[in-house]
Amino acid sequence: MAQYGASPVTVQKAMHALNALGLVETRPGVGTFVRAVRAPRAVDFGWQTAALGSPQARLPAVSSTQRSAAPDAISLHSGYPDRDLLPGRMVRAALARAAKSEAALTRSPVRGTPELQAWFAAELGETAPAGAAAPTARDVMIVSGSQSGLGSVFRAVVGRGRPLLIESPTYWGAILGAEQAGLELVPVPSGPEGPDPEELDRAFRQTGARAFYAQPTFANPTGVQWTPSRGRELLEVVRGHGAFLIEDDWAHDLAIDADPAPLAALDDSGHVIYLRSLTKSASPALRVAAVVARGPVRDRIAADQGSEAMYVSGVLQAAALDVVTQPGWRNHLRAFRNQVRLRRDLLVDALREHAPGAALERVPAGGLNLWLRLPEGTDVERLVRDCESRGLLIAPGTEWFPAEPAGPYVRVNFAGPAPDRFPEAARLLQAALEEQD
Figure 1 (cartoon, rainbow, N blue to C red):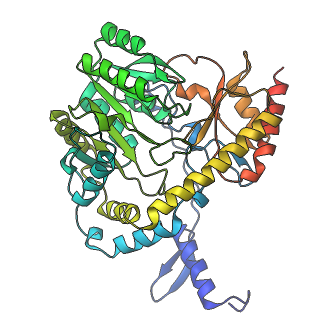
Figure 2 (figure 1 turned 90 degrees about the horizontal axis):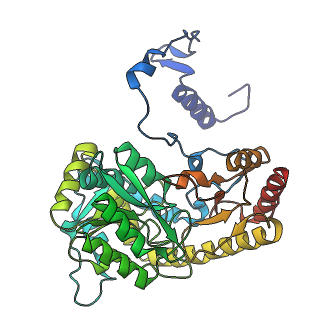
């Protein structure tokens, strides 16, 4: 304190930080001492190569969307919205209240807290047409994020070595989760209105698959939303084959110019297994999602999830329920929609003006991403590296194809930080493209 003119509180915080980093140790009644630095011993982990064998999945353990960015980089690679778009005050207050509740000291039910189950069921039931039986709280299982739910669905419904029909391109996490579950991926190409029903029917007949994974609403990465008629046609194909549609409604709260219309609301016969997450619209720290399934398949998924994760933190469930039932939640979603629309349009305009080499085939009506087609012959991986060397992070489109890429693509997130730098980002992308000529 005397040497640096610091207050006792500042010094105490500094000592606490040093202790947490393992740089000092406190000995009661003696004092605080710098820890001795021990020279690390070289360790050979070569034996693990033989013990582990070849990896089951072809994708890297960490996707390009999960890379950390330098402080001055323009980050368009992430799969999450900018923290300034999230209801930070509501989330912090909800977590504080949950930490003081009984949820902080008790085990939550395996399938989730009844109140949160009921909320997810009611949200889906609101869009159900007249005459259709709405889902109940019993049909809902709370999971630790949709990725965990996908893993359980793939294992319980499809099974190792069995085929899974999957849109192409599609969410990289679904590809990774399916490969880790040992499934055989069967790509079904998807166009501006969704997959062709005849193509899906042919894939079912040729493979004998029992499930089809898809994102009917604002698909990641393309932003495509199935038309209502196309969705009903595809659902009829699934029903006709006595199969399941695994509907990933990850962008339910990310609508911009169109409203979500889950196919699960049209189906009360148990053909649709529905997933919805709060991670993107509330906070990445609230790893809370729901799987909605009806009939015996619900119990199989619950059994797998219970053996994998046992249960989801009651504190997170209580906080999530607190956030979505606050009067300000709907106001947040409206403000979120407006802010994301502005950022989307800013990035679209910047790309059209400054990056003519990156073609945007459609402006998405929701979600977080733009799917850009690059000139034929573009080395996508090299382009991504060149952009990163210039201070721009984008995601290579190769990760979103379950088989060979249909062309050179990159995905950029328009809901990320620093929208004022979108023109600069577009110029950097164009410069990297021109360097490949």
